[in-house]
Image (cartoon, rainbow, N blue to C red; front, side, top):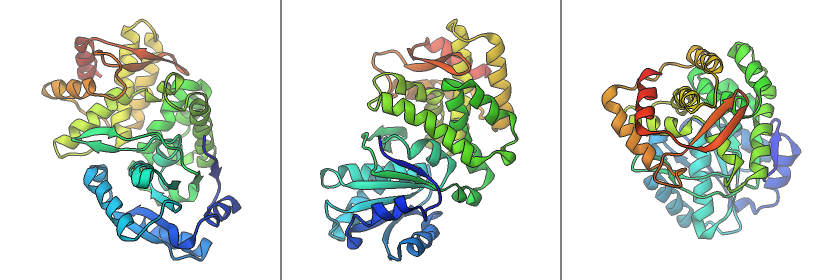
Length: 340
């Protein structure tokens, strides 16, 4: 598991790591939103680091963008002993990490997440990848970064909906692992939360799980809660040309998968109602029309987490306790999607 620093970028850990590399073999990957933050790195390091800039948005996390990164690295004679600096949200850490993992059979990279989603989820744990034919994260590898640097000051730059999107992963961490953390995060108005405490809490939960199961053979699957449904919904909206934020789709997925947990005889009805009420108050409603359901279920059948012909889920036994490798019938899934 990679080292994680939760501090401002002036922290000596960041400079010490950067100074291990040839200054001419440093390159940043940014998007339209995070390109201005390069000036912060310049001020800290006194280096003018070249950058590859991508358009912002999930719809650009694809093979064409990846090929563009490979070409830029090649055109700039980027060596195998260089360092890629992924400066951005989940899209940048995913595609930048995959570019690093695949270019010249693997070069070093670090993540500097600038969104809550990046800090508590995407930048942590070494999952990298791209979307492929509108299937979320269909192509990728697990490769650990040399370090992750979380500076919560970046959160001040986020629109509220982006902050809320990342907050879905925070809620998920509490639901699968820590009831008290769930209750703290959801009982405090989002504008009053101590973001240092939240980021540290989520990173602690995810890091402990990843350390115990880096290759997702067992308990790391807990972190998939809400994502079998959520990714399928997100992919569906991407396919029809109306992308929605990852966290909003996952929030819907957590409600539906909690309902399926009840039907599986695992989760109590009372706790389901608590989860549904909490998520409904926090997140915008994501509507699923009846004629959307076959497409969404078809996408779930191609989910990378499946290991048989059945659709694979993580369900809840209670708030703070999850169980992986669960299944449900297509009829149950369709019903829960429609009513939740």
